[in-house]
Length: 221
Image (cartoon, rainbow, N blue to C red; front, side, top):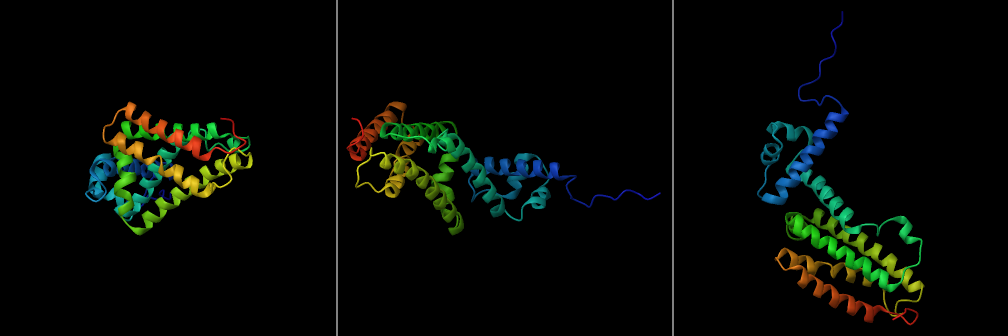
């Protein structure tokens, strides 16, 4: 009788096990990187966080830098999902939009970002301060994400411009980058321990400036 083939040493039992273990390593690396910092972390820290042997890490990733790409994807997915809300729903691009709604979308995104900064400050600090300085490849990815987000905002602005509710001299691409940049100060304030009242004052100031600076002749006051 022929003996069943034996699984090679270190080989995962099946695809489901492989994917589950890989995901667990990514989540463990996320916790380690956002609490200890990427530079100070090691593969041994990641396996210790998960409670598995050191060699397990290298069955799935070649290096600490390799798992960082997956950690960035994991962190960005969390941020975008929580920040965007329904704004990136394809259906939202099919209907008309006015300036007040556009400003409200920005306001909601800021509030969500600040909530993340309060509930998971290590994630926001990593994305804003540590990750952009690791290497050029990661910098390019983060800047690329900024371009995608600003382009999405620009699509909302273009629709508002087509409807005549924006000033004719507003460049929607540049305004998209501007709105993206305006989300950072309240997050910084939150990370510094500033309260909701401080954040609300900032948001009120920005929305007043946006309403006056962007409003076109067809937009109701």
